[in-house]
Image (tube, rainbow, N blue to C red; front, side, top):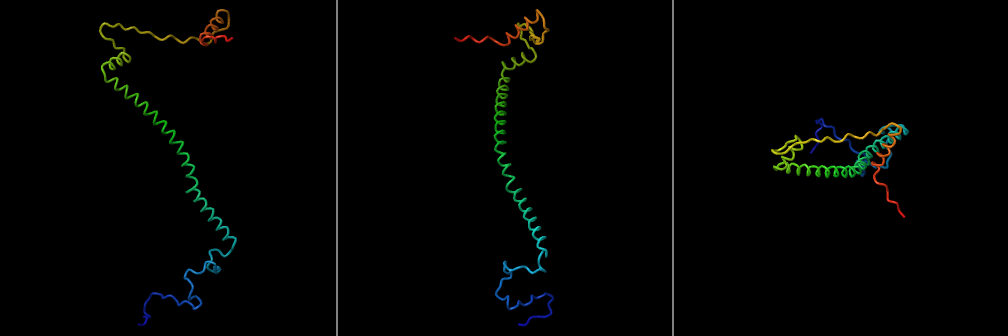
Length: 164
């Protein structure tokens, strides 16, 4: 069989005999010819390599190191959320008990008494207002200093018992 010389596909040139046993990838330890290098100046290549390492290091830190802090912080967040959930469940239980109580006839009448002052036949309604707060600041002078001492003694509570 003969090769046709009319095809438009470029055929690879024959490899020289010196490269007959070598790999197409070439030897990694062999230096790259100057015309095929990315940069012909070594300092530029060094800074480009350092810049590439910095970018790779930054990406590695963003992907592997920074999420560890977030992962460790989630433990605290989970504890706080669990406490909030327990508190909400406790409050929901209290509200459910209140709803169950208000579904009874006694609960309805008690709520009507507390909220709107409902009275049944034969009962009499009396309203008592809470006492107003006592004044804390009294002027200096004879009758007021005695009253101030009495108020402070009552708010302090009983005196401690003497010990022998």
